[in-house]
Image 1: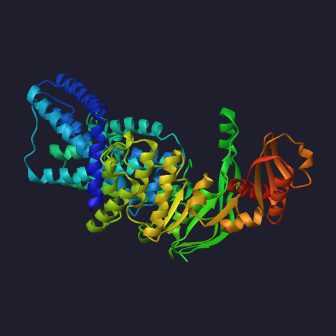
Image 2: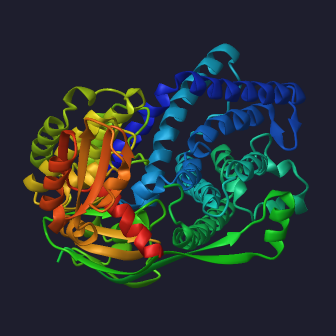
Image 3: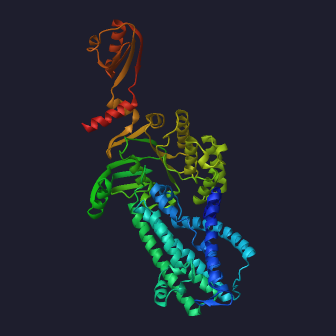
Length: 264
Length: 325
């Protein structure tokens, strides 16, 4: 286990050698958060309700997505594609280590840095804006909130790895990732809660894996879901995780067979 | 036998693509495949503690063979066994006992001090603290890199980085070591040091080493036995000294002349390889060497004369050209 811990630590150190670009990345997130925050703050005046959300619920949702983005949507899986294309994957293949474990540990390292920054940002935000936040005090939703976050992390790892493995077939791993990044952001509910959509669309969206990255955990936190709804959501994300893991392993095997260590 | 390869073949299928956008579209619709025979029907065995040179021009199939041996590639056909394992299964017990060092690939974490990557290797290979300390001090001393360990990888020079890469690759003291162009891009002094290190490692750890290099100096200095391949097929497997005897049963006589002479007079003596007054180079068969040398000294105004073994690079070049014919 210590090796995975060391990978996490190394990842942390590596990010800090690029402090400035990381700080810029965080700054971008803060601006995005502020934009959405003020948009919703002005759309929903105090004491009024829009799309079933009061101002405090909506602002909690918006701030929540910012935090959960750091927890769930931060990843290093794009390195898989780079690794394949540079041929440096070879070195990894020759080590007695589980490859997915290796990348997952890198993911965790990346997440930890993002989470710590996000916490500082949010602390400053509370201090300056004093938003009317909704604090969940009931232990049951909180417990499910943690479970859904873990599922979201796994789900995003599967999606990210699959995108990285495009590298086996094409050197252009960035274009699909970029498109996906935008799509995921949108369908995961980074801009607004997905239940604002008309019911039929929302129902279809719920069958996709994306809502379970941000929207679903936050709804659980806000206590707006009934127990059957929570269980249904968890089941759908678990099914997605299992099927994507299965696909991931298949694609990995097929890709590896093709991998003929480019370059040298 | 530590390594045994029988009838190994590795073919690559690549799709052919014409240049330009139109070519891309065409290859997308109707793909033409092409088979490249990187390695064809190669067999050899290597025993414990041997240090074998693996020679061939670019694209001969050296790296492909090493990749098959270390488990990076599935062989198209044939059997490969290393330490009793089938490499491409990449069994962890197997991986813990081998290492492949590719001169142009890196595995160190670029932005971190060297030691961080080495420590990670320690954990990945589950090396005990005691053994790690011992090997680390031994290897850093041999490689003379003790003061580099705390330097960021990106700040190292090529030679320094190469040595650190090597350290990372062998910190688990592999029993079998595949070195692919370990001295590439290094200056002469560094090449020599690295060579000495490889020799020392081979002796000290009784490791089996297979080494490819473009520099014949590397091979000459390190390997008694060589395996030569070209176009994927095996040309020679045996002692380096036998190769010279077999393919170059001659010596080179180099003469510095005092006065100009007509080169035609030399023709009956032996084959003139090069003549540009005052330098004269002759190729003389092994058995005539004494006779020819005496004659030259007798009949020509000689300032200096030397008798040398043929250049090993020349010999190997001849082996390759003979194959073409």
